[in-house]
Length: 506
Image 1: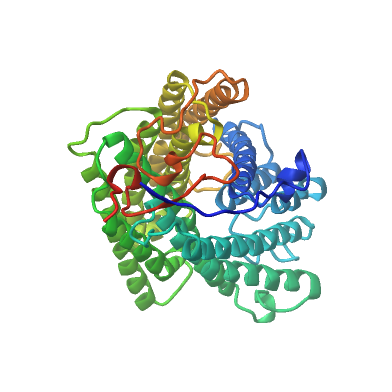
Image 2 (image 1 turned 135 degrees about the vertical axis):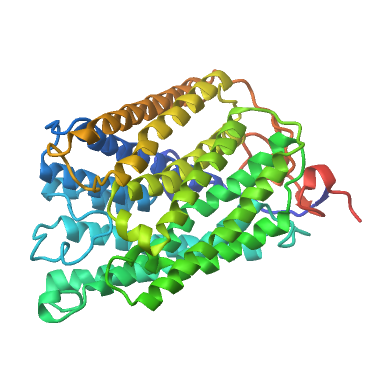
């Protein structure tokens, strides 16, 4: 790999300790701050989920009352869907527990979220938190776009960047285009609540469906905002542990862009039961089927990468391969829900809960853990334990399928979502108990991961990683583990998409 010598002044940090981390402009430290904050809120949302599943384990458990249950699933949904990577937004949101948390559900539908039906300050704090998240997401996305366009290494064209970078680029454009709709909707709702304006209040002649249109025009791109970076992770992990180049690099890149474009044309499928025009229903049903095409391109490209490869079943590879399984299950259930007659029958049942968890929770989390096991050696300089990693994987895989697969049948049996007890339907109890057991197995898997991280990284018992423990081929593996503040002693000059394996100047 060729290098380019340039001289830059050594800039020392102005502060030390916590202030150094808070004021840092080092992208690696900023990434650690994002990861830490995200994971802490993930654990918080997970604890709320355990409370929900404990309540539903039997027909009338009594662990939570109705108000507590509504608050728990609202805060769980908001935390997990918006995943407050912005600490300030998370602090504003969870301060609502002091004055009374919101209980509207994570979609904040009106009129349930108007002052008449939710008079407390919890909804106001939720809207303020979403506003903080909106602005921070837009600024962060613009930062990513500018960085990718202007700070690539010499010779790194757009078809020589990593597929993870492609996914981040598309995600950033989605954030810039979609997030303002949620922010504006939240501000308008806040005006309705605080200044008695009339944007959503149905009793004064406004249209409550306006909220749904604004929310879901953001909400469905948000699904891909959450999952596209995970697609990028899978596209990086699979070729490394298959010992062969990714199959269909350009098609994966193009499919990411296609998913981003089509994601704005399917949002009305969330509103099939809201009384919209039948012609619109048919159009959005067709567009929902269409968006499965670029996603299918990715699935077949990943399978083509694995096929015939010299597979190494490290923990990161196990999570990546399992992601293909669980995401495909979630995608197939989504195709059913994209059909208007089926959606009318299954809307607001546990079937929808199963679908969203298979697509987002299993999908995003399997990608996240694959990324953790893959890049943690580069971040920390030490390897996570493979023994504990495999235990973590198998517990997690068993747990998520036990927790969420039975919900498909519960939905088909007619169990609605958002009920906190069901004494009139004891036939739902056995499957709910299985789901609750699965949720606790997930919690056990997370504890195993936390111990693995503490034992291997914090206590320093993990094996030294070296610069390139996986024999990978992208630029981050050409520098030290962990990287120095200056990243590279000499700026690399790139001649291919696999610079550590194929980069011969020509």
